[in-house]
Image 1 (cartoon, helix red, strand yellow):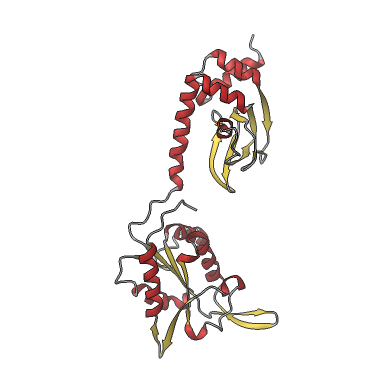
Image 2: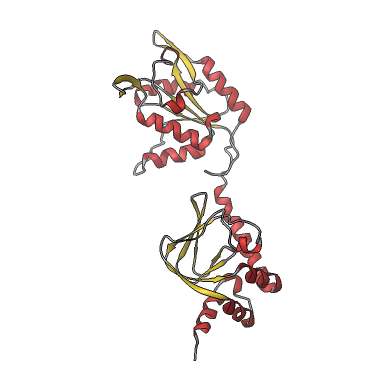
Length: 301
């Protein structure tokens, strides 16, 4: 006659790291652990917190989150929380949140650690599992661009100027994309397209022109389009302030109203006389920064 523990032993045997463990090892683990039912949304471990429990997922799904970003989903047959149990003096490296309610088998970290260190088959399986998870991390590393990539954002009314900015970089080895050049693809959302550009670009120039009229505190001001301010913030957040540049007409530097948080940032300027644009000084500064920093080499954001 099968007992409750027999059922648990059978489920634990399906765990990757326990598949080669002996019956005696499985029984020892069952005696020292316990079952826990978890519901959707429950946080079973918090990044930065203490705790060495290991969670074997018998049913359901667990999201692994680092700094609020979901980096992996673990399902039945997998475990989570093993790093903190092995390095008992370390804090949790990720938050574990229940995506789909189910049943966990919870084992104290010290018991798990003893099992790993004393059972060679368990230790080998854990080593292979950790290697697989390390390989999974490769998805978060972007391959650097072979040459720097520059994105130019502007309003529709300033598109002519944006294209002139692009032409100014023809003498150096850099890929330049203007916002209207196959960036927004059919059936895609503009924000998704912009986020893709922000991740793939190394530098950005945002052209700020007086395209709209805004009322603030009973006064009217000429301002850039809302979407341009949004894109400016998006690129600053994605690639950094030192790689994102604002370009304004010199005579409008003091007239154009910007959000107070960015108004104090040094801007690039150009002159316009009789329909002709003089932006040589501004472009030279950007070229200098591109040559100095080159393509970025960083983890995907």
